[in-house]
Length: 125
View 1 (cartoon, helix red, strand yellow):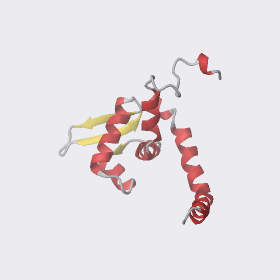
View 2: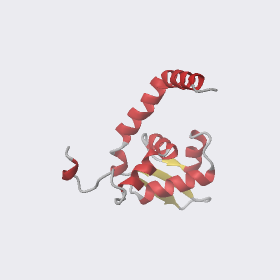
View 3: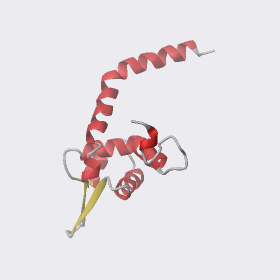
View 4: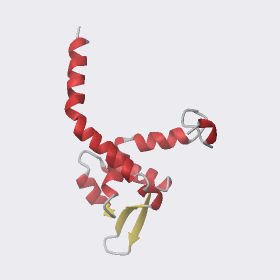
């Protein structure tokens, strides 16, 4: 597709497309979107499933994804209050992309590590 046909140019720093791309390229955002692909999840379930993410970073990531319209948050009046996160219809448009990227990493990790080792060996002085 010709860039001139698009109303937003990802390569032009004057457009907010760069900000959205940065959020989507964030590892935590990708992991949250990937986990929500199979249905709604509670905060603590996400935190347990996504090892290494802090409560603060998960909260920030969820807020950014909600602001961008990719996830929704539903509050249930229970004691204690229950909050579930779910992909929106816009967020669902990303699931194939997120899955492809995640599987690519899993399939190619050995090759990436070999390339890293070769680079490090050649550049150690």
